[in-house]
Length: 187
Image 1: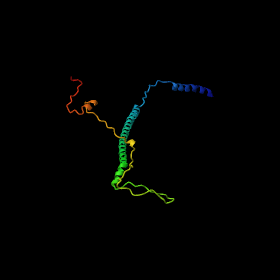
Image 2: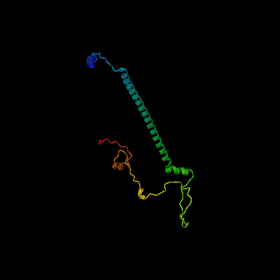
Image 3: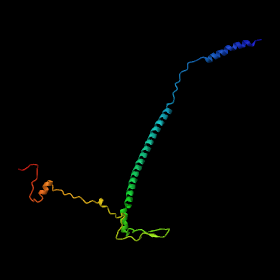
């Protein structure tokens, strides 16, 4: 009979040979794998185009905002001028002299002296009465100025041109022609 041990010994070299055959390294030609350029170029182009379009839209919106601000400033200036005109018109209409002239034109007169009624006793104080049409209408009461505030005017007479003050008094009766003086003495 045969023993199983010799069979295994004969098998081992065959398995080892097969393993050695498989494990043997061989030179394989290099494969050059290039990354696809088309997707990268497309990505860069899209980013650049997006940036340019974004800048264009931003610039356009900034210009529109600038035009809007200029328009609003112009409108504000116009409204400020209108307000000032209306304020000046209101001041002119509120002028007391204009109101007094309009009241007089309508036939109004200034009120007379007032009379007062004391409510507790029913007594009347003062002489009340209608206004005097001859007096007219004035918003400022007529007040006399003190004499100190209205001094007499001082009159100064000026001698005629070309004469000295003491010559003017001596030549006042002389009707003859005078020679113009040019700084030289005639002698």
